[in-house]
Image (cartoon, rainbow, N blue to C red; front, side):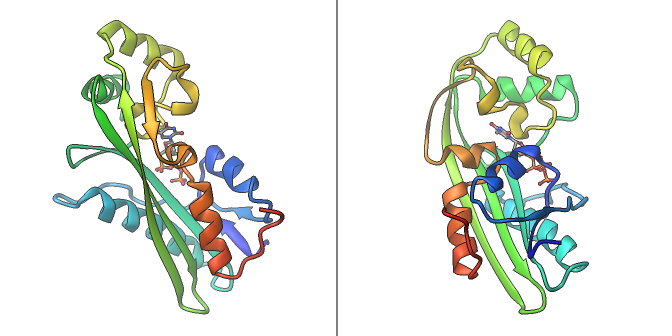
Length: 193
Ligand SMILES: Cc1cn([C@H]2C[C@H](O)[C@@H](COP(=O)(O)OP(=O)(O)OP(=O)(O)O)O2)c(=O)[nH]c1=O
């Protein structure tokens, strides 16, 4: 067991964290991801990332545990992963021609030392205007059911996202520069990063 644990089932987060060069173990945290009524997006992603990290840290109190949660937010609403194709179509049509933010919460926890660091990172996304046919073609081809907001910036060949401002890796699920800074602050060595 490595001293650093990524509390995530996301293959994208695992691939991104590997780029920092520090060894880690993956242990997904199966938690309830429903949001509370009236909970603002920033509070929600912080609560989710903290809950994922703490869930694993309780079992491994001497390990450093990193949890993350990514959502799409538009007009104060939270879009998580779509339930089905109809939900995905409704999400993509609400994003069509609009500007939204992708927000990731990050939590680094170490129980034995009582350590907890929380961060949020936001990236602004400008979407193209999409027709109903664009939306159904995208959903049928890409099946984006495991993605917040029903799309993946890394898997859309420019048909959805016109441009973005801010951190790209944040949209894919793990803002790398901020994650590296958090790990460094906690005294964790990063191999060459
Ligand atoms: C908007 C967007 C989201 N996503 C992904 C990132 C996250 O993996 C996912 C949001 O779901 P999350 O609940 O943040 O993460 P997860 O369920 O994949 O993994 P875990 O909870 O175990 O850590 O959407 C993309 O890959 N590309 C994108 O463009």
